Image 1 (cartoon, rainbow, N blue to C red):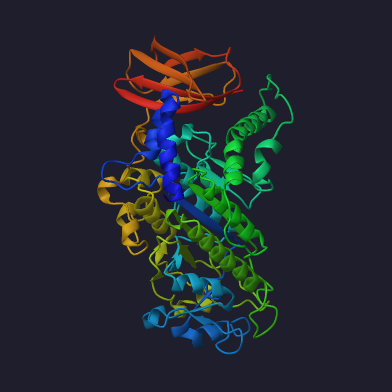
Image 2 (cartoon, one colour):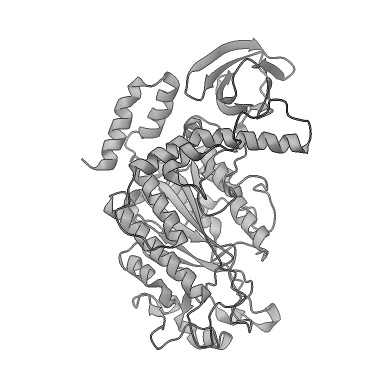
Length: 544
């Protein structure tokens, strides 16, 4: 029996020993709809190339090599010598003929295995060339023309709290981040703020034992000030981290790596991700980071030479991804994982005179994994667009970055149309990204069929349909229940984080509010199940 099938069977078989609340969550996690494939183990691994990767020196447009050379006389990737470009695929059309940077030998290897698809000219409408703003736009799911998809929550968080609503009650984080000292805005949901855990700087094997954010019992009387608000947040984060830490450590200790990895930071991050997946951590989205792509200078070390900062970064990236893929394949878990790279924007077509390049607009995206349909989407960018009159920018976007994410969220993870639209909507075109998917991105056997979409999203209404609010969250003694339903009475059940039912009450609901006094409860995470007018909602709150 395959290892992962045994894990699924063991999890289902042991569920009878759980509490009713846990049993409900376990069954929804492991039992697919009738005639639908089990996709509960599928995961996304996102690699942020921070600083804005130079696409033209990553994949060279061979059909325009002379124009490329004129724009980049000193930093171009040469067409001869030991460090000449690598021809990707001679069978591609002329307008798709690509030369890989010679640092990308590992990309060539996984492309030849059919595990890599390259997307040309990825960006978004009205590109913002500020690192901070463009990164925020990528993480919130917006397009530079507006913030209609929200500016205080991330698209990953919105997606996870809708599609994996039942799993927000579990003891593992839905997202795991490595490689940055700050938790990404992308994981910040509209309702649930503790959807991801950042384990940067921690030893995952001992994460549970070393985590002690406040070093003792937190204060109970917090001042009504900015300081008190910040301390509330720290206490909240500490509690959630401790809830999730044991799952991280257990998965790491039970997982393994089957292949050696290069001794680089990005490889170590991917190595940790592979081991956590191997250890059956049920987190759904992993985010890792490779920094240093803001190559205004020293992109190459000298004229007519490719060696330099950019070459080193691409070497680390491609070797790390190849090791990661070989590791997953060796452990028979590769079919459950798809990864991709993204960067906040590209670089100008013309070099800048300092052996580097300045801020541009579009950049390629690399999607990898056994479920990925290998190949190239789009054509080489048109270098004739780059003129002195537009500051040598290539501005034609062939793929909105959200097209790639929407395709994977629906076709690979099985999200419904309503979940995709609540995650992000194309307000510029006034169109759903479910109508703009990249159908060639995945191999056919791995695409979730239309009748199975939403099979993991069975109980929680979409954001715009939610009727109840619990506040403040975190709370101290009293939590207020407020709603838009015209209900005369309301039933609520309160569970602790282990799934034990603490209260099951029906109370009169007047003037749209109900104060629930819970000063006798210990600090911790509690689950509220609210029932009224034939509707049910589940909310997670924290008592401090």
